[in-house]
Image (cartoon, rainbow, N blue to C red; front, side, top):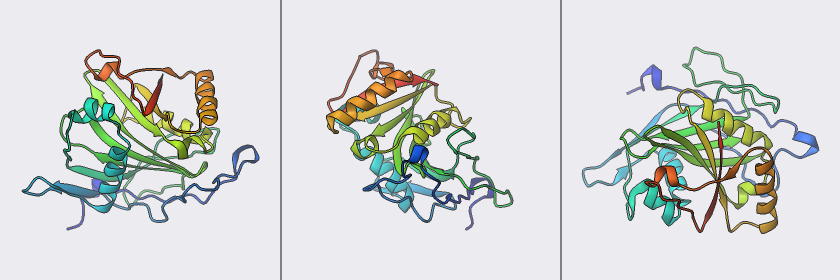
Length: 246
């Protein structure tokens, strides 16, 4: 049965743009963006036995994000020892702003709408229940050749976008992607108050130190999971948390 028109999304990846400041837009070792972004919503549902039955895209986004969770993140956001999987809906989506870094992104639309190509493509899993995590997110930055993974967490009046900066991300050109993540927080659908970066503590120390220094210059600061952990200032052995209000 065809999906309702309201749930359809059409995405056209932009051909690679010239790099910023003479830097190639896709550095060596970074995987190429997917050649065929999702063109329609996919859904996942649980079987009677409780095991999740997912479409390929849904399983990839949610599974790959959860793979990056340390014990602290699992305890805070999934429940200690929880192996639950939640029904999800995957949509293709583009963020909404134009900026100085060549990012021209538009929200998802129906098949009758014209859509310009964009260097960023966002896919997300929508979690329908009232858990702390409301969405799982994967964003491709076609300018820097980087894939970002993360999730949106909500608790009372607090809503934050968490994004993993693992070793592959830290080694890339982050300028355009970081701007796009900040803009994604302002999209009406997400409306996040903060962007929280989870920086890999096991990445190359020099690269990590340079990144945290640069992030400090533009307004990011060290933070904990206090807002989501009943007031406990939790940190992680795997991830260094830095945040900025959006």
